[in-house]
Amino acid sequence: MGSILARANMTAPAAGGAPPRATRVLVVEDEPMIRMLLDDMLRELGCTVAAEAGRMDEALDAVGKGDFDIAILDVNLNGETTVPVAEALAARGLPFVFATGYGPHHLPEAFRDRPTLKKPFQVDGLGRLLQSTLAGKS
Image (cartoon, one colour):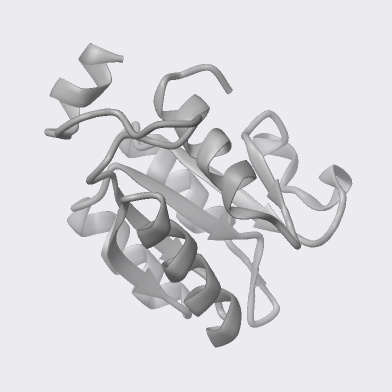
């Protein structure tokens, strides 16, 4: 995991299948309660919420700034698919995972191979998914 730590300027790996400490996360989620839950879970994992977005314009702006190590994208923002955000992240080579309460058939076809966090989720599952995605194993 040393190369991941160096690439993202992280300090040390967290224990128990969690992402490296100080991992900076972009959270793209339109539901305030889910966003708050994600914030709490990410902090528990030792991550930093670098930016939050509840609307498409906010999400694209945050991706343009790119001041994060990984993004968590809700598949649907207020009735809009987050495909433009996923495309912008992919174009910049930034890792991301989808969060959805629906099955894989609801994911955008071009991104069905991407890691997915199934709602509702637990902190340990979130940690493992972020760790494996950052390590390039997902």
